[in-house]
Figure 1 (tube, helix red, strand yellow):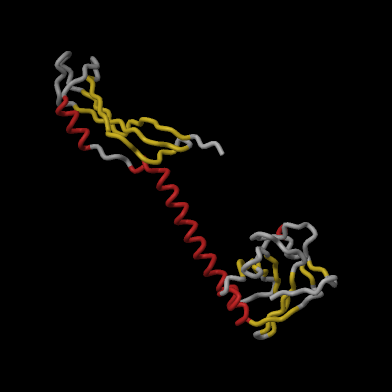
Figure 2 (cartoon, rainbow, N blue to C red):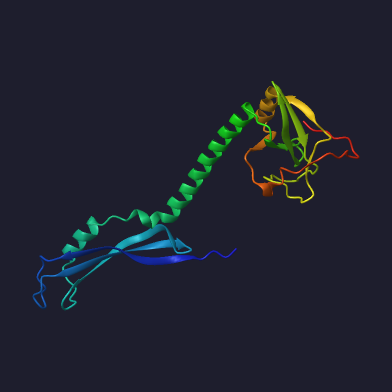
Length: 218
């Protein structure tokens, strides 16, 4: 992957001083400009480096002067926060991801504690198997939850049917309890809970087909 990066120089502050008399033309307007080098990735400032530099000139004749005043304005200039934009962006993305994950975990617990017909669970197989399959809530009778499985096994985390021919099989209607669902969630076997999903997930497709091999699910 090509990453565009490098260093640039940016003017971070400009001062206009009307109290200094130019030694060349007698004008009282002098401009001081402060510059800072920074490292960027895709032109986004990540971190400043080196020392700040300052220039001064008379606005009328361009004469550079007054080293003492230059030091004064240089000391007054603070590196702006936007020079750390890249770092701030990365921290913001990480923070947002953490907050989103916490929200999803909380929502998942609420869905498991209060299941609804149509909920779809993504189940992870045994710890040494990288296998995932879906279970869909078909009926709820008091504490009993009746589930139907999908027909495909996936080798990675998915949020919808990736196989066009996948479906939920009505032939294998099995029951479990709310407490068992909570145990599966605590054990990390229920990886996601989908509710109010879109049509393109494929979760509305149901068929009644007997499989050649015996089904083993939760």
